[in-house]
View 1 (cartoon, each protein chain N blue to C red):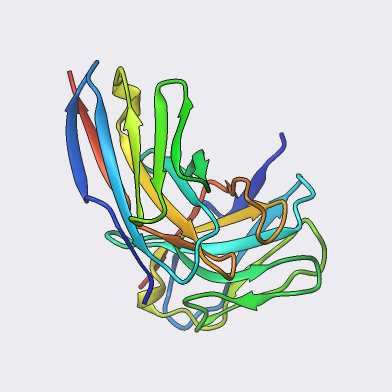
View 2: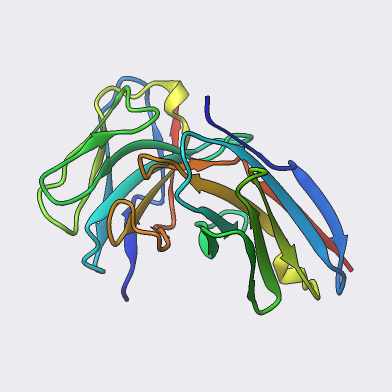
Length: 109
Length: 114
């Protein structure tokens, strides 16, 4: 079966750095997405990786290793507004998105 | 305002009743999707449409139906609601199936079936 694993919850301090991991086992691979979802709101797109390596976008970076079935989202200079759930999703060989359950990130002052 | 609009935002429904969740987008996206989101689970695809006039079943299609008469609208119908369909429903769109760009989500419809 297809599976996306990510931690259920993480806590970090304002101003610090946090890394959210995602491992996957899917039927084929056509890219990995990270979305941010604030409580009670819709998910919004953060990043897309299809090749191995690090993609940097401001305070957020996303890394992919296809051989290891592994990705992480790195958030730097954490702000209180970064408190949200972070969803990892993989596009399989049928171009369908398989979603992880999300990681709830709690930022403390 | 460009984007996706869902209605209603919240609804309480008696079991056995019929319910249609509406979804409209004005971005001229070809592909549209309906997901449900339940606590502790990832988003699960109910039905999708790659282009107007076509629809397909997702991971959890039972008890739901959709139609895609035109590019903009993609309603989701629960023919006879059951309590297990209590969930938050998100409509989404993208340029096309297999498109490596982002999904755009509506604000969600919170449905409670009693």
